[in-house]
Length: 175
Image 1 (spheres, rainbow, N blue to C red):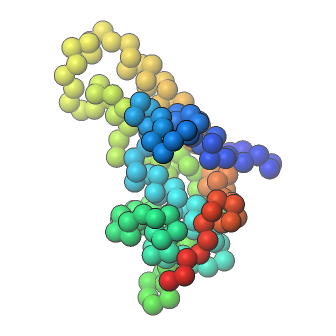
Image 2: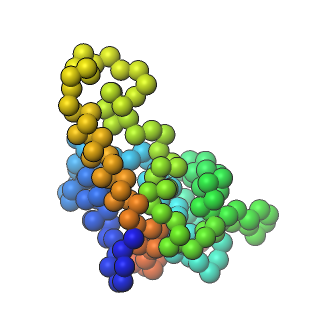
C-alpha cells in the first residue's frame, strides 16, 4: 500500500499493466500483456462506487458514465457482490456501494477474483503442445514477471485510485 499523499495515476497504472504511455486509442495493446475487459470494468465500477461514498450508485448511471454495456456491468456487479467487494441494495431506490472501505480492498485481490486465469503463454495452461516445453526457460521468466505484477498490485488498494469524480471526467449522468 502506498503511504501518505502518494497516489497511483492512470499513467502509473498503465505502466504497472505494461502498457506504456498511451499514444492513440489502440496504442500498445497488441503486443503487451493486458487484463481482461472484465477486470478493467470491475476496477472502473469499484472506482466509481468509491468516488461516491455518500450514496448508492446504479448500474445504469455507471454504464452511462463509462459508456459501457449495462448487461456486461451487471455480470461484473454480481461477481463483485459475491466476492464481497460491493454490497447490493435491492428495490426501487437500490443500488451498489462498497462492502468495505477502499483502503481494505486490495487491487491484487480484485484482479485475482476477476481474471479467469493467468495463462500468459500456452505453457501456463492445462493443455499445451509447444515442443520447447521440456527445455524452455521462457515459462520461468514469464512466471517471475507475473509474480512481480501481482506483488505490485498487492501493494495497492482501491484507496490509491479514488479521485474526486470531476478529476477523471465522470459526473453523475441524468437518468
